[in-house]
Amino acid sequence: MRFYKPPFAKLFFPEVITKLKNDLYITIDDSPSENTGRILDLLDKKGIKATFFCVGQNVLKYPHLQDEIVKRGHSVGLHSFFHKSAFKVSKDFYLYDAKLAGDVINSSLFRPPYGHLTFPIYNELKKKFKIVLWSYMTYDFQRVRIVRDDKISQGSIIVLHDKQDFYDVFENHLSQIIAISAKKNLSFNKL
Ligand SMILES: [Zn+2]
Image (cartoon, rainbow, N blue to C red):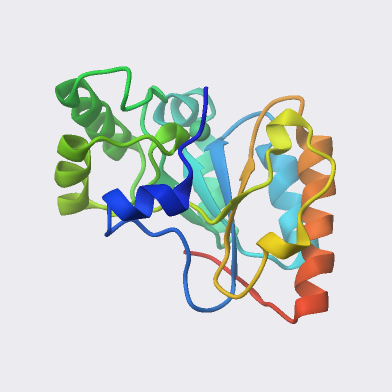
């Protein structure tokens, strides 16, 4: 499924966050998974605090991992319960799904799956949540090899994924991001 292009989204949904002023933000979508433990160890080793956008049904599948993410000093956000696109379900279903996610994930941050939003959904969600998209998706899940230097600057919000069978790409992309951040003198922060 195609992702929404965040600069485009910003035109239609002005309160959506796609970039900040300072620091560099690693955000990790679709957590938790069987990889989360390894991701947490890697982030500890590198001294990076990140933001995990968790999917409600995955939180129920790995109930101890959300607590572990928070215990290690990272932030969590909602990434829906069933990971449905706002273009594929009704507004009522979408909001019900967001409520279910809110029952298992304690956060005021919400990232819509695929970056998809509609006006009616946006108008309701923004009453309760800070809606966070991103400035740069590395397409780790498509095994893209090169992380683009020109896409990373002060305030960038980068998306990586916590997906089964993709830990090697996660590790590789994170190390490229760390090298770029060192070259550009950027510090990591969490949302
Ligand atoms: Zn997702």
